[in-house]
Image (cartoon, rainbow, N blue to C red; front, side, top):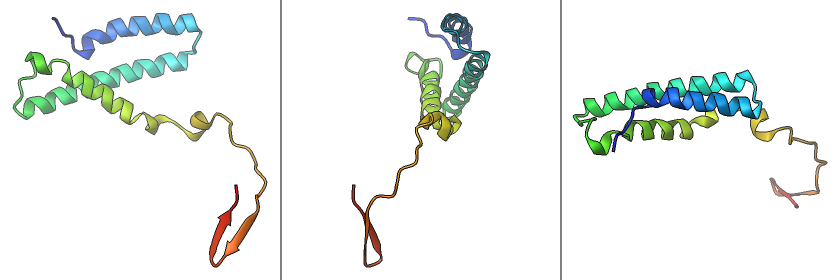
Length: 113
């Protein structure tokens, strides 16, 4: 079985993303964001390859060929919230709610639902 590094796959994935984006009518901003993410993924993969190599691992052995790419994808997934804003997450779902009954007991407020 032949494995490929992200840099080799990026061109194929980029072509797929361009066709997919154009067919769905998404704007150019999404397209450039996807291209930037693909470039970052390749850079992160190279960094993981370097780390494994510096730790003394043979990065060309079968069990490690795809590990840098998997680790890079995992890191992008785990940190994707850094790019999101509250507006992206809430999607105008914020609304005013009148104050409900509250009762002060000592110095603690207890709100009834």
